Length: 226
Image 1 (tube, one colour):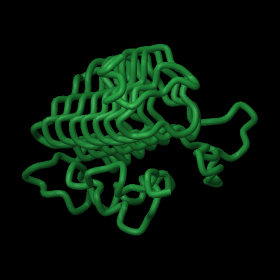
Image 2: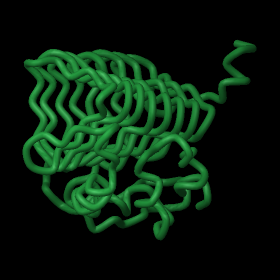
Image 3: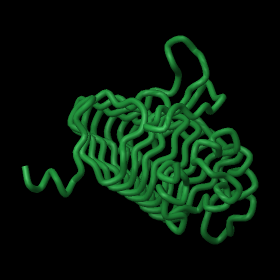
Image 4: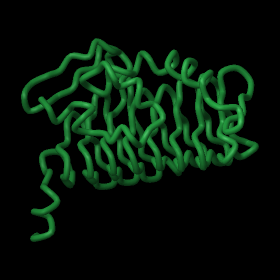
């Protein structure tokens, strides 16, 4: 099940959080560790590059945070990141270099790699978003099952039990999520995959694919010939 591993999905050179992935196989294994990792990492960040605001909030001096945004610690906002009007960062959040957290977007227990964009009315919770991944306007991660049972990852090889009641989505590098899409609990989307707008995604979507609707997923090289 190599396709679901950290190595297959992420370029770890594109996150300040590289160390959190050292001893795990699957990316969702880091979710319970994000808060403690931020506190440890934040304490090591250079004062000449980061301001410490309040309790356990580190903001790069080159980041731009709108006055109306709210950031609860522990959190790290990376270099040249932008946190826009009325963004709500609830804690346990790493916002990578050059990332955009948009108008009224809510983050909770997440790692956003460098240059991630969640720019318009997004909810991202208990998730990891890879380098240059982008969530279209109004797209969200749903992180709790309606019956409140532990989330599993549905794969072509069977279920992977996670034991977690809160688990949103793992997006690989350069994933594009269309506007209005819901990523259901336990969604895993491989690198450079595109999801059509207004989709409801569940389980694993292979790398290099186009997800048109449930049951209709094509490889990008196939799409060019259609």
